[in-house]
Image (cartoon, rainbow, N blue to C red):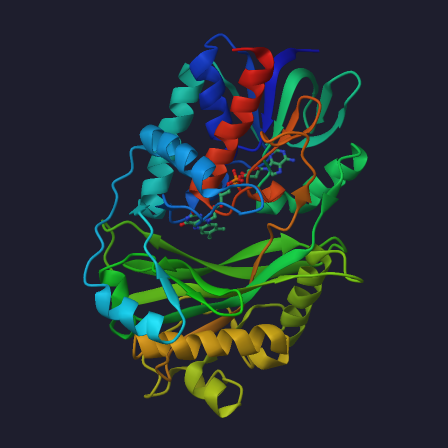
Length: 428
Ligand SMILES: Cc1cc2nc3c(=O)[nH]c(=O)nc-3n(C[C@H](O)[C@H](O)[C@H](O)COP(=O)(O)OP(=O)(O)OC[C@H]3O[C@@H](n4cnc5c(N)ncnc54)[C@H](O)[C@@H]3O)c2cc1C
């Protein structure tokens, strides 16, 4: 059995950052980076807009402004992003503050999905050149904590340090992993919402601020705005009961691709559960299965014009003369979101949309499409033994799957922080 100084499971930004940071202090470190998919680097493959201001992407349970700002500086130093200019925002800001909404000013860069792929290629080549063994289509299955052995889909391997960074798709895996290894965790929060798609002229703010972050009352916010060559996409998940469900999301290509004149963004509401409901994940899966039931196995889409009148969108009505653009995710089922979304979420989101329409008039054009469900699974909250995300001796849980980040920059920072923990314990 081969023995490694460090095994990293998951090649998303969290795992990559940990590998780079460890190598920066110990060039001869023997690192194995395994990735269960055929392709690597997880969520870096999507849109790749990065936020470089606290608290975007940095869950406040684990990050305060001071810590995250120090880490953001390090992420920035490594990734060297081109920060996009923001301009002409004072009118939007004034309108927002008049109605109790905040427009956060966040430093951002945007590579686009194609730019993200190029970045991944460069990063992996650098790691390989530095001697990291990168193994695709290899999944961490379980470990034996006592002998420090990792069981993967391909082999058994010894480790001195283990970093687990499985992302949101590894949510279920991580829960099982924590249960098997006596790592206590809670999972009591959830973000649920819709993805809004409209024409660029109905949401022109994106020309001045790529991903505008509006914070509405009732823990509701805009999230992940895409424009240029922008598309709504669906992500496939498997629930604990084996059922498949989809959550919508969005991405955009870089400015090298011809624009399609559309914008998409999410409006999400966060809820934290108390007794007797213990699991945000179980609740998310229940909501998603209701959405799949009403959408015939697909996400639902509804035009604002129909939503306002309290009627479903139909296939025929979807593209008549009033409704002037084709949905970018046509596989969704035209339907009625209010049949599938609980009132607590629906009311807050509709209220937020009306406020947004006051700030950016036109976004609620009758042709605007709402896609449902968009559900964010970062509810796992392991009980850590130290501030460096060590959950058991020599085992670190990081990235979105462990709830320590909510975006590329935060995930990268969580990888740096775990590596810092290892460095400190080793006295490097
Ligand atoms: C469509 C889409 C668009 C997005 N756009 C943006 C954006 O523009 N900006 C932004 O900041 N964030 C965006 N995100 C979110 C972002 O991708 C994540 O926040 C980030 O990638 C999290 O990093 P991570 O390293 O924790 O996990 P991931 O990037 O998800 O990587 C985890 C990796 O671990 C692998 N894995 C899982 N389980 C195992 C296992 N048992 N063994 C081995 N490997 C395993 C997975 O296959 C995956 O490749 C987007 C996400 C999606 C889906």
